[in-house]
Image 1 (tube, one colour):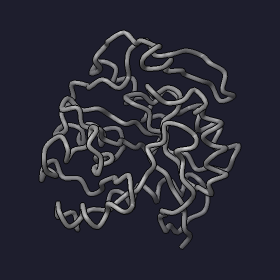
Image 2: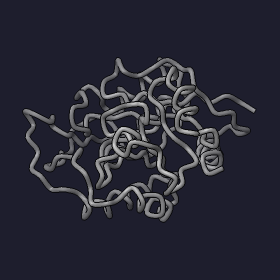
Image 3: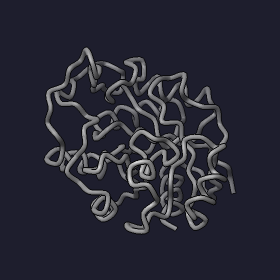
Length: 240
């Protein structure tokens, strides 16, 4: 068994309010400096920078995961991860019909840049990505599973867009095997208060700028070596 240090919640310059310096190559490079092995790119309601991140991650020896931070109709953030990049992009395409298409104000929300694998700007999203979709929390798991993905509530220990802060408790349904906590020091309190003993706790940074990324601390123990095997074993663990 080998330890693979992870961060499964990082935003690129595509996300509103994320720094333009958070390019796919800069994220991969900072992940290498931080000693991370597995990194998920999880922009708000879009996977469009995931292809560039996969290319950049390969150059730095980082195992990439394609993801998205979905905003539900209740305004709750949910991390959605996909084993295959192609399935993530298919999900991204289908998600567009569920978004709130409010014109982006770059002076307020940022430019929402789409880049290629060399960090060249190839486009931008014209609509604000952080606004709620019309997908309910109840419907997210089955929807994501249809694309070979898994999902779980993001940063449950935060007030902004956290499932507990929004609903007042952790819901019994839909069932989530995993939950994300932003601060390790919150784990004991939240597990006890909300009876999360049956959940896998995932600690991730929710980095919107490069300096938010954290040195290696949290890890999965997996019995494999190459990138595709590691990603497959990671998803097997997350599905348990």
